[in-house]
Image (cartoon, rainbow, N blue to C red; front, side, top):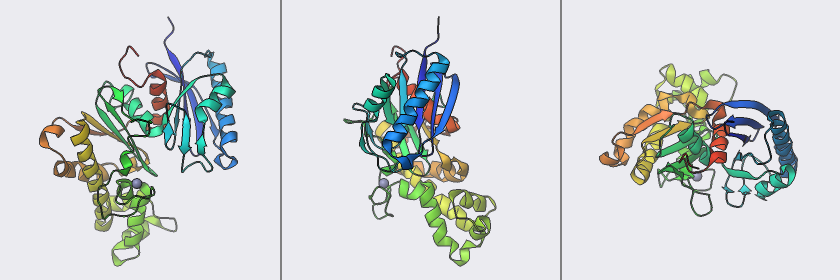
Length: 322
Ligand SMILES: [Zn+2]
């Protein structure tokens, strides 16, 4: 008997990646291409379809094999339309699902990368077998996904679970989304770098300037300064971590998850971020709701989106019958 295999596609701002993945999570026939986002949506969609054809041809995957696509930005997974995406210029109301079906002859399931990653963590990651899980991607932006009762929770038009844009401070800084005081405006890479830029210009900023050298100040710069014991860098990460803890406390009250998984590029900060988050959570949720709660880093690394797309292709419901 053949094991069930799907085609997983990760559309990113820099690379398009595709692979064949088994229901057990074995990843083969991996290929990637540059996104070339500057050439506009049609060129990118053509490259995705070509990559799909190449991988499926190589793996002998029939036209009826399930396909999952993880893409950035708000996407309606019911219609396959990408409303817009900050990482891909000129993507406005792009019928990605329909165009891929026309070009490849395959029906695809689409979802935004945060929602996909939530499913991937619940099926393949540290949350394997967990029916109630909240996933947060801390990176350039902050994305998320919610699995509740073994199902992906994403609202009426599939646009839900924008966990990075919950308010943690009504009088906080402006966010990239236009809102005020979002989690992202405290804990994203850009927000940490913004806070560090301010401090670097003061007498407290010597360690930050030293770590940055002639390059820009990034979240990694702040982490390096904090590890060398710099109190200013530690204060910046403490604030970002407390914002993360406040948001997680809210999610704990709403969803009562068994596990909160944190992934994304800001993972380089490690416990410098998660320790203050852990310490803050009790200030922001009921004791009963957080009993037994686990908070862990994702272990899927660069393949998070591919595993997420795989999980999406296998079904938005974790029940093995689906
Ligand atoms: Zn926001």
